[in-house]
Image (tube, rainbow, N blue to C red; front, side, top):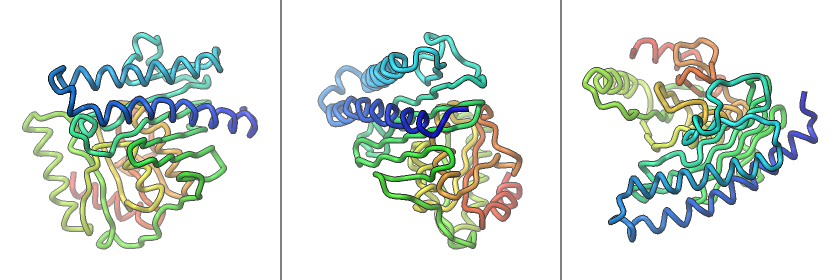
Length: 270
């Protein structure tokens, strides 16, 4: 197993990579209005790719034997399957739609798994200058200050986050909105930030009490965020209430007081 010292070094490297990629995102974020004639999707693709290349090049230089899984170039980097090897799992730009619209919920997410378990997590929002960090067993932090999940004990006063996803076929949209409709009667209110990683960070620092999402992009959306929630004293689980599987594209998060009632509400809403 990796020692505490090596985990600390891995975290420092990940923070360095996230900040460098953050500069690229920040520049692109404020340029979007000027370069719309290029096509906003092209711009995002370029920013995405530039960030992923930057992060992976930096990490590969430091840790040539480690494995890499990234949203943009999994095929190019040759890894799609998560093994027990030390594996860096990167979303170079979570919140792409937000990025295009100049909505400031965008981030880079860098997670390191060893034995398929997240050991190091960094989520950085360069627009709001918020850096979330965690090492397995050592707590979670926002800009260096310890963070904790909320102590909200009741659904009726809980703030829920979810996402509608990218599919727009009638079956998916109806299922998603019917579920939200049902949950809205039971919670205080709903937020959709447009970033799975930042939703998890929101639970970790107590801004949000509950979060669930199904059908998100892949492990890069959650690898860092799930560690942050757990290190902040929260629970990560499958929306069905079963154990969380990092490869399943299904995640739920809450504080320990709300898990059972949340799982029950999700079951009734589905």
